[in-house]
Length: 196
Image 1: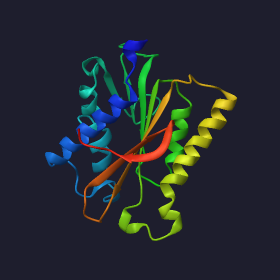
Image 2: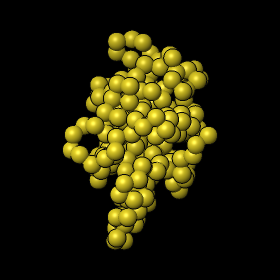
Image 3: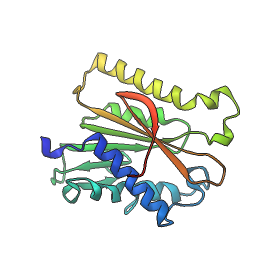
Image 4: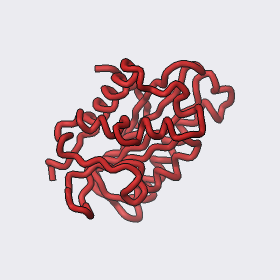
């Protein structure tokens, strides 16, 4: 089973490397997740040749990882090394939510088995945090995720080695690129994503 694992730290670094390369190469859509209603941002993150597809090649077994987006039980993305038409062993499940309700997507992650589960969502921009609600938004979401995991594991425990990663994007100003932060079920305190 070890051959199927993607370590959380390896995924965080691959995400960081892919993001900073996209910034350096000018591939990041200007409007970001906050802009237009079309699927430009979703495609940039989830689509074929998007961030999630490209970052798998930065993983140690990346050439052996099959990328599936919006297909496996309607997850935004999944990685697996099981080449069967009906795979039963997944390396990671990934959910991406542009809206204000990442809880809806997080529920799906709780319901499946994989050693790594990733939730990508967005905070209010620093320039938009004009209320207590907006200032505490990410903390409240992460606390809800932790509470939901605790409730789920009380009823139907999953492997204690399962790791949940949370990637939170936000803008400092209305025109700046996103800054990314990451946290996990082991540490809910978001830390900045850093260039290697």
